[in-house]
Every structure is written in C-alpha cells, then in structure tokens.
Length: 103
Image (cartoon, one colour):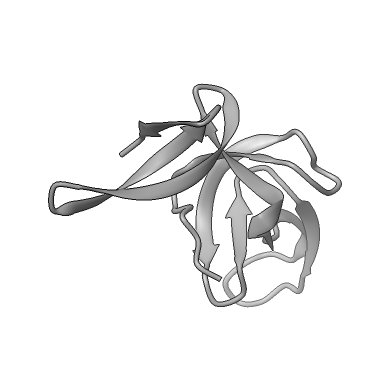
C-alpha cells in the first residue's frame, strides 16, 4: 500500500486503544503498512540482563497500522494527496474540499 505519510509528520490516532492521542512519526514500515508514533501504543518489553546492560521491564512504542492515523494540519486531521507543481511533486492537505500545499 502506498503511503503519503513520512517520518517527522504530526499525526493523530483515529482508531484503537490510543484513539485521540497525537504524536510524531518516528519510523515508517512501508512493507508492512505500519508506523511508530512517539508515546502511542506503549507496551512493556521484558529484557534479560546481559553483558551490556541491566535487565528489567522497558516501556517502548509498538507499531500501529497506517490506516489508524491521520495527518494533522493546523490541529485538524486531514487527508493527504499529491499534485505536480511545475516540475516538482508536492504533498497537499485536502481541507473541506480545497487543496493546501504542506511541503
């Protein structure tokens, strides 16, 4: 599935246990259609102690499906699209039917 979201985008979660939370995308997995959003979908990882560090419970973010997040434009969730302006392809936010360039 092709995605218009990229690392660093501000998004809001629209489905799941963290619905309504906002954060920045830290990783995009295009092969599995998943994104990691900062401070969203937190899980506990039980780490065994090893030579480099101490063991214990570590809280970290897990990926969520890309269809469960929407791009935030001026604090509102919007759909994204692309347009060709001149000889460049740019991302646009579709706000109430009108198209606003974001990049």
